[in-house]
Length: 392
Image (cartoon, rainbow, N blue to C red):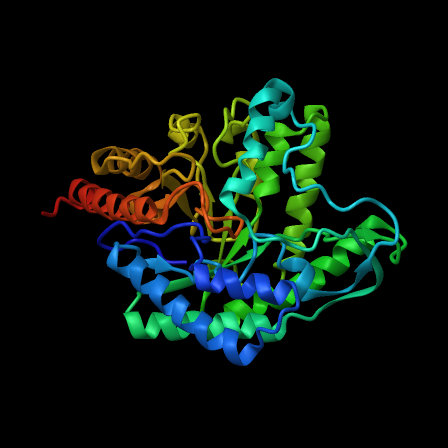
Protein backbone atom coordinates (compact mmCIF):
# COMPACT_ATOMS: atom_id res chain seq x y z
CA UNK A 1 0.00 0.00 0.00
CA UNK A 2 1.21 3.47 -0.86
CA UNK A 3 1.10 6.39 1.52
CA UNK A 4 0.89 9.86 0.04
CA UNK A 5 4.14 11.76 -0.19
CA UNK A 6 3.32 15.04 -1.93
CA UNK A 7 -0.32 14.66 -3.00
CA UNK A 8 -3.56 12.77 -2.41
CA UNK A 9 -3.73 9.55 -4.41
CA UNK A 10 -6.95 8.23 -5.94
CA UNK A 11 -8.41 4.78 -6.48
CA UNK A 12 -11.79 3.01 -6.60
CA UNK A 13 -13.27 -0.31 -5.44
CA UNK A 14 -13.11 -2.53 -8.51
CA UNK A 15 -16.10 -3.50 -10.63
CA UNK A 16 -16.89 -1.43 -13.71
CA UNK A 17 -19.31 -1.89 -16.59
CA UNK A 18 -18.22 -4.74 -18.86
CA UNK A 19 -18.15 -4.14 -22.63
CA UNK A 20 -21.16 -5.75 -24.30
CA UNK A 21 -19.09 -8.01 -26.53
CA UNK A 22 -17.34 -9.38 -23.43
CA UNK A 23 -20.71 -9.97 -21.76
CA UNK A 24 -21.89 -11.79 -24.89
CA UNK A 25 -18.91 -14.13 -24.71
CA UNK A 26 -19.20 -14.69 -20.94
CA UNK A 27 -22.87 -15.55 -21.33
CA UNK A 28 -22.13 -17.92 -24.21
CA UNK A 29 -19.43 -19.67 -22.16
CA UNK A 30 -21.81 -20.11 -19.22
CA UNK A 31 -24.32 -21.68 -21.59
CA UNK A 32 -21.70 -23.89 -23.21
CA UNK A 33 -22.14 -22.27 -26.59
CA UNK A 34 -18.65 -22.64 -27.92
CA UNK A 35 -16.60 -19.52 -27.13
CA UNK A 36 -13.19 -21.02 -26.46
CA UNK A 37 -10.13 -19.49 -24.80
CA UNK A 38 -8.53 -18.75 -28.17
CA UNK A 39 -11.41 -16.39 -28.90
CA UNK A 40 -12.19 -15.09 -25.43
CA UNK A 41 -8.75 -14.40 -23.98
CA UNK A 42 -7.45 -11.96 -26.65
CA UNK A 43 -10.72 -10.03 -26.55
CA UNK A 44 -10.54 -9.86 -22.76
CA UNK A 45 -6.92 -8.66 -22.82
CA UNK A 46 -7.83 -5.79 -25.15
CA UNK A 47 -10.87 -4.90 -23.04
CA UNK A 48 -8.75 -4.77 -19.87
CA UNK A 49 -6.26 -2.46 -21.55
CA UNK A 50 -9.09 -0.18 -22.67
CA UNK A 51 -10.68 0.03 -19.24
CA UNK A 52 -7.35 0.64 -17.48
CA UNK A 53 -6.53 3.40 -19.98
CA UNK A 54 -9.86 5.05 -19.23
CA UNK A 55 -9.12 4.97 -15.51
CA UNK A 56 -5.75 6.62 -16.12
CA UNK A 57 -7.31 9.25 -18.39
CA UNK A 58 -9.88 10.16 -15.75
CA UNK A 59 -7.25 10.58 -13.03
CA UNK A 60 -7.23 7.28 -11.14
CA UNK A 61 -3.79 6.49 -9.68
CA UNK A 62 -4.36 2.96 -8.34
CA UNK A 63 -6.21 1.02 -11.06
CA UNK A 64 -7.65 -2.46 -11.57
CA UNK A 65 -9.08 -4.55 -14.42
CA UNK A 66 -12.66 -3.55 -13.62
CA UNK A 67 -13.35 -7.20 -12.69
CA UNK A 68 -14.61 -7.58 -16.25
CA UNK A 69 -13.73 -11.29 -16.51
CA UNK A 70 -16.03 -12.06 -13.55
CA UNK A 71 -19.79 -12.35 -13.60
CA UNK A 72 -20.02 -10.83 -10.15
CA UNK A 73 -18.02 -9.68 -7.23
CA UNK A 74 -18.36 -12.98 -5.38
CA UNK A 75 -19.87 -15.65 -7.67
CA UNK A 76 -16.52 -16.30 -9.31
CA UNK A 77 -15.42 -18.14 -6.16
CA UNK A 78 -17.50 -21.21 -6.98
CA UNK A 79 -15.62 -21.51 -10.28
CA UNK A 80 -12.20 -21.30 -8.63
CA UNK A 81 -12.66 -23.78 -5.81
CA UNK A 82 -12.81 -27.55 -6.14
CA UNK A 83 -14.61 -29.92 -3.80
CA UNK A 84 -18.17 -28.92 -4.70
CA UNK A 85 -20.93 -30.56 -6.70
CA UNK A 86 -24.56 -29.71 -7.52
CA UNK A 87 -26.94 -30.49 -4.71
CA UNK A 88 -29.55 -33.15 -5.43
CA UNK A 89 -32.01 -31.43 -3.17
CA UNK A 90 -33.31 -27.94 -2.74
CA UNK A 91 -34.75 -25.38 -5.10
CA UNK A 92 -32.61 -23.19 -7.34
CA UNK A 93 -31.07 -20.24 -5.56
CA UNK A 94 -33.44 -17.29 -5.72
CA UNK A 95 -32.22 -14.36 -7.76
CA UNK A 96 -33.55 -11.82 -5.24
CA UNK A 97 -30.71 -10.48 -3.09
CA UNK A 98 -32.23 -9.36 0.16
CA UNK A 99 -34.41 -11.96 1.82
CA UNK A 100 -35.80 -11.15 5.27
CA UNK A 101 -33.44 -8.39 6.30
CA UNK A 102 -34.25 -5.33 8.34
CA UNK A 103 -34.24 -3.31 5.11
CA UNK A 104 -36.85 -5.46 3.37
CA UNK A 105 -39.00 -5.65 6.47
CA UNK A 106 -39.00 -1.86 6.73
CA UNK A 107 -39.48 -1.23 3.00
CA UNK A 108 -41.13 -4.32 1.48
CA UNK A 109 -42.86 -2.41 -1.31
CA UNK A 110 -39.66 -0.72 -2.37
CA UNK A 111 -37.55 -3.88 -2.50
CA UNK A 112 -40.27 -5.81 -4.33
CA UNK A 113 -40.28 -3.04 -6.92
CA UNK A 114 -36.48 -2.92 -6.96
CA UNK A 115 -36.14 -6.61 -7.78
CA UNK A 116 -38.64 -6.26 -10.61
CA UNK A 117 -36.26 -3.78 -12.23
CA UNK A 118 -33.65 -6.52 -12.46
CA UNK A 119 -34.79 -7.68 -15.89
CA UNK A 120 -34.42 -4.13 -17.18
CA UNK A 121 -30.81 -4.19 -15.99
CA UNK A 122 -30.24 -7.36 -18.06
CA UNK A 123 -27.79 -9.16 -15.80
CA UNK A 124 -25.79 -12.16 -16.90
CA UNK A 125 -27.63 -15.42 -16.30
CA UNK A 126 -25.65 -17.50 -13.83
CA UNK A 127 -25.94 -21.12 -12.80
CA UNK A 128 -28.38 -21.17 -9.88
CA UNK A 129 -28.10 -24.79 -8.75
CA UNK A 130 -27.19 -25.02 -5.05
CA UNK A 131 -23.80 -26.59 -4.32
CA UNK A 132 -22.60 -28.92 -1.62
CA UNK A 133 -19.04 -29.48 -0.42
CA UNK A 134 -18.58 -33.22 -0.85
CA UNK A 135 -14.77 -33.54 -0.94
CA UNK A 136 -11.66 -31.58 0.13
CA UNK A 137 -11.73 -27.92 -0.86
CA UNK A 138 -8.90 -27.00 -3.24
CA UNK A 139 -7.97 -24.02 -5.35
CA UNK A 140 -8.59 -24.83 -9.02
CA UNK A 141 -8.71 -21.39 -10.61
CA UNK A 142 -5.03 -20.74 -11.26
CA UNK A 143 -5.37 -20.49 -15.05
CA UNK A 144 -8.09 -17.85 -14.85
CA UNK A 145 -6.31 -16.01 -12.05
CA UNK A 146 -3.01 -15.92 -13.93
CA UNK A 147 -4.80 -14.69 -17.04
CA UNK A 148 -6.34 -11.83 -15.06
CA UNK A 149 -3.00 -10.94 -13.47
CA UNK A 150 -1.19 -10.98 -16.80
CA UNK A 151 -3.87 -8.83 -18.43
CA UNK A 152 -3.78 -6.22 -15.68
CA UNK A 153 0.01 -6.03 -15.55
CA UNK A 154 0.22 -5.69 -19.33
CA UNK A 155 -2.38 -2.90 -19.25
CA UNK A 156 -0.53 -1.09 -16.47
CA UNK A 157 2.67 -1.19 -18.50
CA UNK A 158 1.00 -0.06 -21.72
CA UNK A 159 -1.03 2.78 -20.22
CA UNK A 160 1.54 4.07 -17.76
CA UNK A 161 -0.69 3.52 -14.73
CA UNK A 162 1.14 4.09 -11.46
CA UNK A 163 -0.14 1.19 -9.34
CA UNK A 164 -2.48 -1.79 -9.71
CA UNK A 165 -4.79 -3.66 -7.37
CA UNK A 166 -6.82 -6.84 -7.83
CA UNK A 167 -9.96 -7.63 -5.82
CA UNK A 168 -10.59 -11.07 -4.34
CA UNK A 169 -13.42 -12.15 -2.08
CA UNK A 170 -13.01 -12.68 1.64
CA UNK A 171 -13.43 -16.31 2.76
CA UNK A 172 -17.01 -17.30 2.05
CA UNK A 173 -18.41 -20.78 1.53
CA UNK A 174 -19.99 -21.25 -1.92
CA UNK A 175 -22.00 -24.28 -0.83
CA UNK A 176 -23.35 -26.32 2.08
CA UNK A 177 -20.84 -28.56 3.85
CA UNK A 178 -21.42 -32.32 3.99
CA UNK A 179 -17.75 -33.37 3.96
CA UNK A 180 -15.99 -31.71 6.92
CA UNK A 181 -16.78 -32.70 10.49
CA UNK A 182 -17.37 -29.12 11.64
CA UNK A 183 -18.13 -25.76 10.07
CA UNK A 184 -14.87 -24.48 11.55
CA UNK A 185 -12.89 -27.12 9.62
CA UNK A 186 -14.88 -26.30 6.51
CA UNK A 187 -14.19 -22.56 6.68
CA UNK A 188 -10.52 -23.21 7.42
CA UNK A 189 -10.32 -25.30 4.24
CA UNK A 190 -12.04 -22.57 2.21
CA UNK A 191 -9.61 -20.03 3.67
CA UNK A 192 -6.60 -22.19 2.85
CA UNK A 193 -7.79 -22.46 -0.75
CA UNK A 194 -8.46 -18.74 -1.15
CA UNK A 195 -5.09 -17.98 0.44
CA UNK A 196 -3.55 -19.43 -2.73
CA UNK A 197 -5.32 -16.73 -4.74
CA UNK A 198 -4.32 -14.00 -2.29
CA UNK A 199 -0.64 -14.96 -2.30
CA UNK A 200 -0.51 -15.30 -6.09
CA UNK A 201 -1.85 -11.76 -6.51
CA UNK A 202 0.66 -10.32 -4.05
CA UNK A 203 3.57 -12.33 -5.47
CA UNK A 204 2.73 -10.84 -8.87
CA UNK A 205 3.48 -7.37 -7.52
CA UNK A 206 -0.14 -6.20 -7.29
CA UNK A 207 -2.02 -4.87 -4.28
CA UNK A 208 -4.53 -7.42 -3.02
CA UNK A 209 -7.94 -5.97 -2.20
CA UNK A 210 -10.03 -8.27 -0.02
CA UNK A 211 -13.72 -7.62 -0.73
CA UNK A 212 -15.92 -8.29 2.29
CA UNK A 213 -19.36 -6.68 1.81
CA UNK A 214 -21.11 -9.09 4.15
CA UNK A 215 -19.10 -7.75 7.10
CA UNK A 216 -20.82 -4.35 7.24
CA UNK A 217 -24.03 -5.68 5.68
CA UNK A 218 -24.54 -8.35 8.31
CA UNK A 219 -23.77 -5.90 11.08
CA UNK A 220 -26.51 -3.52 9.92
CA UNK A 221 -29.16 -5.44 8.00
CA UNK A 222 -29.40 -8.88 9.60
CA UNK A 223 -32.26 -9.43 12.02
CA UNK A 224 -30.30 -11.34 14.66
CA UNK A 225 -29.63 -9.62 18.00
CA UNK A 226 -26.65 -7.28 17.97
CA UNK A 227 -24.56 -9.50 20.24
CA UNK A 228 -24.99 -12.38 17.76
CA UNK A 229 -23.98 -10.16 14.87
CA UNK A 230 -20.98 -9.00 16.86
CA UNK A 231 -19.80 -12.56 17.47
CA UNK A 232 -20.23 -13.41 13.78
CA UNK A 233 -18.22 -10.35 12.80
CA UNK A 234 -15.45 -11.36 15.21
CA UNK A 235 -15.40 -14.80 13.60
CA UNK A 236 -15.14 -13.23 10.14
CA UNK A 237 -12.14 -11.19 11.26
CA UNK A 238 -10.49 -14.28 12.71
CA UNK A 239 -10.94 -16.42 9.59
CA UNK A 240 -9.80 -13.62 7.28
CA UNK A 241 -6.66 -13.04 9.32
CA UNK A 242 -6.04 -16.78 9.13
CA UNK A 243 -6.25 -16.64 5.33
CA UNK A 244 -3.85 -13.67 5.28
CA UNK A 245 -1.38 -15.14 7.77
CA UNK A 246 1.47 -15.59 5.25
CA UNK A 247 0.96 -12.32 3.38
CA UNK A 248 2.68 -9.05 4.38
CA UNK A 249 -0.03 -6.61 5.53
CA UNK A 250 1.53 -3.78 3.53
CA UNK A 251 0.50 -5.56 0.32
CA UNK A 252 -3.19 -5.78 1.23
CA UNK A 253 -6.14 -3.45 1.53
CA UNK A 254 -9.66 -4.28 2.74
CA UNK A 255 -13.05 -3.15 1.48
CA UNK A 256 -16.45 -3.45 3.12
CA UNK A 257 -19.83 -1.91 2.27
CA UNK A 258 -23.54 -2.58 2.69
CA UNK A 259 -24.38 -4.72 -0.37
CA UNK A 260 -27.06 -2.29 -1.53
CA UNK A 261 -26.82 -0.07 -4.54
CA UNK A 262 -29.86 2.19 -4.65
CA UNK A 263 -32.10 1.93 -1.60
CA UNK A 264 -33.32 3.64 1.60
CA UNK A 265 -30.34 2.33 3.58
CA UNK A 266 -31.82 3.30 6.96
CA UNK A 267 -30.44 0.11 8.52
CA UNK A 268 -26.82 0.62 7.52
CA UNK A 269 -24.67 0.10 10.60
CA UNK A 270 -22.73 3.17 11.69
CA UNK A 271 -19.01 2.83 11.07
CA UNK A 272 -18.43 3.36 14.78
CA UNK A 273 -20.27 0.10 15.53
CA UNK A 274 -17.70 -2.10 13.82
CA UNK A 275 -14.63 0.08 13.33
CA UNK A 276 -12.74 -1.54 16.21
CA UNK A 277 -13.19 -4.96 14.61
CA UNK A 278 -12.30 -3.75 11.13
CA UNK A 279 -9.04 -2.30 12.41
CA UNK A 280 -8.09 -5.74 13.75
CA UNK A 281 -7.96 -7.08 10.19
CA UNK A 282 -4.30 -7.55 9.33
CA UNK A 283 -4.05 -5.25 6.30
CA UNK A 284 -2.56 -1.85 5.52
CA UNK A 285 -5.61 -0.04 4.12
CA UNK A 286 -9.32 0.16 4.86
CA UNK A 287 -11.94 1.12 2.24
CA UNK A 288 -15.47 2.02 3.36
CA UNK A 289 -18.49 4.16 2.48
CA UNK A 290 -18.55 7.91 3.09
CA UNK A 291 -20.10 9.56 0.00
CA UNK A 292 -23.36 7.77 0.79
CA UNK A 293 -25.19 10.58 2.60
CA UNK A 294 -26.07 8.27 5.51
CA UNK A 295 -22.35 8.05 6.25
CA UNK A 296 -20.95 11.44 5.18
CA UNK A 297 -20.81 12.58 8.82
CA UNK A 298 -18.72 9.62 9.96
CA UNK A 299 -15.36 11.32 9.59
CA UNK A 300 -15.97 12.16 13.25
CA UNK A 301 -15.13 8.59 14.29
CA UNK A 302 -11.47 9.46 13.82
CA UNK A 303 -11.75 12.09 16.55
CA UNK A 304 -12.03 9.23 19.07
CA UNK A 305 -10.27 6.37 17.27
CA UNK A 306 -6.56 6.36 16.55
CA UNK A 307 -5.61 4.89 13.18
CA UNK A 308 -2.84 2.34 13.86
CA UNK A 309 0.64 3.20 12.67
CA UNK A 310 1.44 2.19 9.11
CA UNK A 311 -2.24 2.10 8.06
CA UNK A 312 -4.16 4.19 5.55
CA UNK A 313 -7.86 4.82 5.05
CA UNK A 314 -9.69 4.88 1.72
CA UNK A 315 -12.95 6.73 2.38
CA UNK A 316 -15.43 6.70 -0.47
CA UNK A 317 -15.71 10.23 -1.85
CA UNK A 318 -17.86 9.22 -4.82
CA UNK A 319 -21.01 7.13 -4.50
CA UNK A 320 -22.14 4.10 -6.50
CA UNK A 321 -25.72 4.73 -5.35
CA UNK A 322 -26.56 7.90 -7.26
CA UNK A 323 -26.04 9.28 -10.75
CA UNK A 324 -25.37 12.69 -9.27
CA UNK A 325 -21.72 13.59 -9.85
CA UNK A 326 -20.17 14.82 -6.63
CA UNK A 327 -18.69 18.32 -6.72
CA UNK A 328 -14.88 18.46 -6.54
CA UNK A 329 -15.05 21.00 -3.72
CA UNK A 330 -17.21 18.65 -1.61
CA UNK A 331 -14.80 15.80 -2.39
CA UNK A 332 -11.90 17.99 -1.32
CA UNK A 333 -13.72 18.87 1.91
CA UNK A 334 -14.16 15.18 2.75
CA UNK A 335 -10.52 14.41 2.05
CA UNK A 336 -9.30 17.33 4.17
CA UNK A 337 -11.62 16.46 7.06
CA UNK A 338 -10.17 12.96 7.18
CA UNK A 339 -6.58 14.11 6.59
CA UNK A 340 -6.68 16.57 9.46
CA UNK A 341 -7.61 13.72 11.78
CA UNK A 342 -5.38 10.86 10.62
CA UNK A 343 -2.66 12.65 8.61
CA UNK A 344 -2.52 13.76 4.99
CA UNK A 345 -0.13 10.95 4.11
CA UNK A 346 -2.72 8.38 5.21
CA UNK A 347 -5.84 9.24 3.18
CA UNK A 348 -6.43 7.85 -0.31
CA UNK A 349 -9.54 9.04 -2.14
CA UNK A 350 -11.80 6.16 -3.18
CA UNK A 351 -15.34 5.11 -4.03
CA UNK A 352 -18.08 3.72 -1.81
CA UNK A 353 -18.38 0.49 -3.80
CA UNK A 354 -18.06 -0.93 -7.31
CA UNK A 355 -20.20 0.41 -10.13
CA UNK A 356 -21.12 -2.96 -11.65
CA UNK A 357 -20.88 -5.55 -8.91
CA UNK A 358 -23.13 -7.84 -10.96
CA UNK A 359 -22.24 -8.09 -14.64
CA UNK A 360 -25.08 -6.80 -16.81
CA UNK A 361 -25.85 -4.92 -19.98
CA UNK A 362 -27.51 -1.98 -18.24
CA UNK A 363 -25.82 -1.05 -14.95
CA UNK A 364 -27.75 1.24 -12.63
CA UNK A 365 -25.14 4.00 -13.02
CA UNK A 366 -24.24 4.56 -16.66
CA UNK A 367 -20.55 4.24 -17.41
CA UNK A 368 -20.33 7.78 -18.78
CA UNK A 369 -21.43 9.02 -15.36
CA UNK A 370 -18.85 6.79 -13.68
CA UNK A 371 -16.05 8.37 -15.71
CA UNK A 372 -17.37 11.82 -14.75
CA UNK A 373 -17.30 10.77 -11.10
CA UNK A 374 -13.70 9.60 -11.47
CA UNK A 375 -12.77 12.96 -13.00
CA UNK A 376 -14.49 14.79 -10.14
CA UNK A 377 -12.60 12.64 -7.64
CA UNK A 378 -9.29 13.48 -9.31
CA UNK A 379 -10.13 17.19 -9.32
CA UNK A 380 -11.18 17.02 -5.67
CA UNK A 381 -7.92 15.26 -4.79
CA UNK A 382 -5.98 18.07 -6.49
CA UNK A 383 -7.89 20.69 -4.53
CA UNK A 384 -7.28 18.81 -1.30
CA UNK A 385 -3.59 18.52 -2.16
CA UNK A 386 -3.38 22.28 -2.60
CA UNK A 387 -4.96 22.84 0.80
CA UNK A 388 -2.96 20.21 2.65
CA UNK A 389 0.47 20.78 1.09
CA UNK A 390 0.07 24.47 0.32
CA UNK A 391 0.75 23.96 -3.40
CA UNK A 392 -0.86 25.52 -6.45
